[in-house]
Amino acid sequence: MLLVADLLGVWLAVVVAQNLLHLNFDGLGTWPGALSIVVFATVLWLAIFQRIGMYGRSFSVDARDEVYASIAASAMAMSPALALFLIAPALEPFRHALVVTLLLSAVSVSFTRFAAHGLRTHIVPRSGRRIAVVGSPDRVLAVPLDLSLTASDSVVRLPTDTFEFDLLGVLTESQLAEVDWLRTAFERECDELIITDAVPPELVPHLLRLTESHGVKVAFAPMRIRPHGCDFTVRRDGGLALLYPRSLAICTPGAEAFRRFFDLVLAVPALVLLSPLLLLVALAVLIDSGAPILYKQTRVGRLGRNFEILKFRTMRVDAEIATGPVWAQTGESRTTRIGRFLRRTSLDELPQLFNVLRGEMSIVGPRPERPFYVEQFRKMLPRYDERHLVRPGITGWSHVHMRRNVDTSAIGERLSYDLFYLEHWSIFMDILIICKTAAEFLFHAAA
Image (cartoon, rainbow, N blue to C red; front, side, top):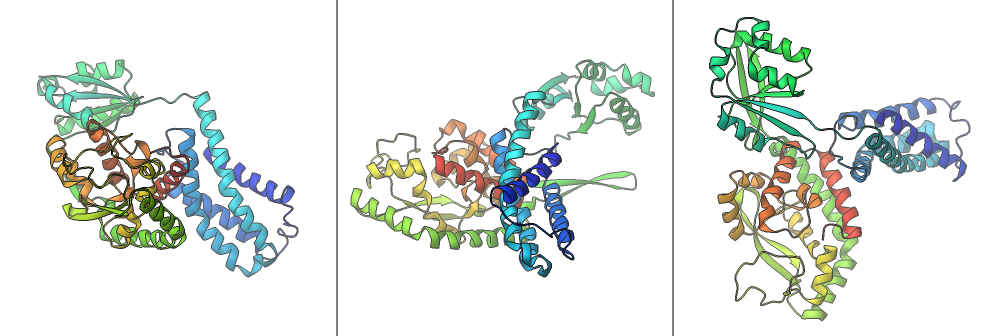
């Protein structure tokens, strides 16, 4: 359905280019090599969409997110196609028309995907997973806490103190089918079965045949092995199944170098283009509440190193003299007149582009916190320090899903978003976050 929607979007772009903009494609089919290059560019576009997961399960929860994802994916897919259109000599007579059509395609593909997402939601309501968890009671309680569950997912807990005894003497497939917890999982129409205890190896083939016949996936969750700040690969070596830990993709040297290059490519032009706005905001802060214009605050960065974050000052100079560190809230009485506007529009964050240039921050990453609060959150949340595996960001996955100022009780939710970003990072995800941040910056949605 999405592939058809994308092809329809490209066709719509061609129609608009021909009939509304009166661009000329006459002779494209007969010009030597021209049509084949255009077809190749279109196939390349679709191949990039396929590679980054645009034809599978995505992060697009609603139709609006589908638009952000389409724009981000189009930005990646357009680059090689645009290069082909600009350098191929065979396309010289049609170059202007093709480049304009390519840019229109990014818009039309987003529109058709928006429509397809809405149509699918209307015809086939979003359904969640039904997951059965079986094993000793304490493990059955612990497993769902670490799963990435959505509101539409449901968990069937099947605790048993007699897991090993239940399988004692079971030799055949028919005997296994009579085990209480397995029969219950089938009766409850679960589509996934997570087993926390060890199953005898000779029973695994029987278990797989039974579950596959009922359309149920089986997974084993060894409770002593937790993927904290790493990923795992299972490989078979002879009669052994070996579990190989490896660094998360975002933590590899190649990803680190690429993200640094990506940061500089964005930050340097942004500072040049936004320099008049930066000067205007600086002047407004100076007139409204005097010096200093910039506010420096210690934050915890990559690998736990402290750095000074830069912001336009939005609060009184003496805001924390009497109280010490205070968690920022919406509607602060300590905020200056111009500060309220800067915080509502997120313009106070722009000086952090200089932190990016200095290598202390990235454009995208977990938002940095103050050392005072980091010490508290470390005690509350065992995985909190995993946020510090990468440079903190001006924006991030949690930033585009939650409001800027949240209560400390929501830090667990923010951490779950940050961990999801670390575990699923890709350059496409970074571009998606930037697109969504830009839209929310324009409409003040995350202020």
